[in-house]
Length: 270
Length: 140
Image (cartoon, rainbow over all chains, first blue to last red; front, side):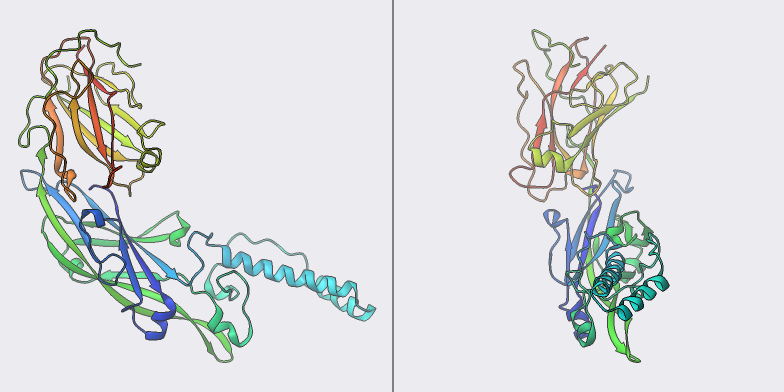
């Protein structure tokens, strides 16, 4: 089919960080099962790529692959990407409001103190850009609540995995030409890996996806996000068939129009 | 006169499968005939062609990640039903993409729309094939 092929790399990040491997911690899916893909939902996906060629041997249909990483145990990718940063700001605002409410019922000295803090902080400016990086956010759990204290490293949600490269046999053999492209779709963090496929050389070709995860670790008396680079493998099974005329099964012929026109011709459709 | 006329079927696959039909804007047919075709952009396209021209049909998905292929094109007889022997059903997993739907226009009685059934297949399964009987070829 000439449709674009999607390959979803669903990573159990907690398991992968614990085991330090993507083996048994990755579930790979594509939308080509009906065209012969096997191993859907396992770590051993073989994607069927059904190519075609013209009678002169040239490639008949361009096939395109897209790779998207998803996280198990993360905030769903359908939530807007600014969600974590926005939640962090809301939590700060809520803290200030709580403090204000507290001050209203407190003695003069405490109220004066809170008012001074409020003055020092000034008016909150709503930021719409930047501060979306992992490091500038609060640590949130999967329900969007802040986690704090000793539980932080255990209770947080994981950042979406990032594919950093696609290498291996299929690339070395020039079967696929992968590259990372910019995308306006923030579900993909604004980037996605894609490749065109040379379907002229049938065969099964392996490729390696390089996946970067982020681990929250306690270091130097503080929490830090650290990158963990892991890899997983999948395969493409390329087959190719000759194009043929669908009416004749061979070459070009007359269209099989019913010879006699209708007795009472219908008016041409409007 | 251009020796070739292209007819493109633009299909909203998700819409068509959800509605169970190609109406409701789920199918738009467009051609590049030099003559005054009617119904461009609708399922009621009447393409004006001359004998000897080659007509080629292609299906394209509006959402590029959805599958759609032409499964069959059959001209209708006087009773409005497909004429001639039925083509065998495609086998599961068959690559319909290898099919090239093109043919030479024979002599046609002028001014009469020769309607055809356009069958489109989206993915596989009992509800994967939908058709319209409304498009036509006509000689001026």
